[in-house]
Image (tube, rainbow, N blue to C red; front, top):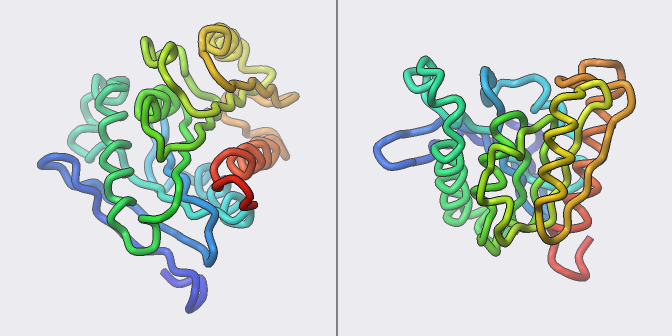
Amino acid sequence: MRASMHDIADEVAIRAGETSLAGVLHVPPDALGVVAFAHGSGSSRHSPRNHRVAARLREAGFGTLLFDLLTEDEESDRHNVFDVELLASRLDAAREMLATDPRARTLPVGYLGASTGAAAAIIAAAGRPRVRAVVSRGGRPDLAGAALDGDLPPTLLIVGERDEDVLSLNRHAAQRMRGTVRLEVVTGATHLFEEPGTLEQAADLAAAWFRRHVPPEGVS
């Protein structure tokens, strides 16, 4: 899939032990970093919402990696969907793949997680210097457990105003986390940010956070 002769989205395979995960890596020219997406339950690399957010991040100067954290067979077992440690190990595999890809290996990394994928992103980011920032969109950071007390990169929690239960969980998680953490509430939004303009607002918040925290100092 070619956006232009200088801007190419490639199908990639991510090795996680004996498992191969399908993904799409898109690195624009002069990228400031690469953001790997950790989708939530029932989603995949084909998620229209994630593709809309990814397009906004590329406009902001970032490469994007959208990939399936589970195979089709694994997805059929609902236990796997909520196994945040397993999902985090898949993000680790994605980060290792990026470290060997010619277009991405020199670039810092950010994670963007939704739903259970947000907990996986926090777990996978803890103690990883190359991961410079995490964004959670409608996520469940509370499921990250002990990782919330660890050495985390700057973390942004984006929640819809009308997603009341998840908003409460995010507030408690933010209070527990050390380091740089910020909670942004999108007015009028529910869990999936389906209301007009709300997903775009969440994408803009994510892009601004990554631009502030992912590039090396002095680069923007």
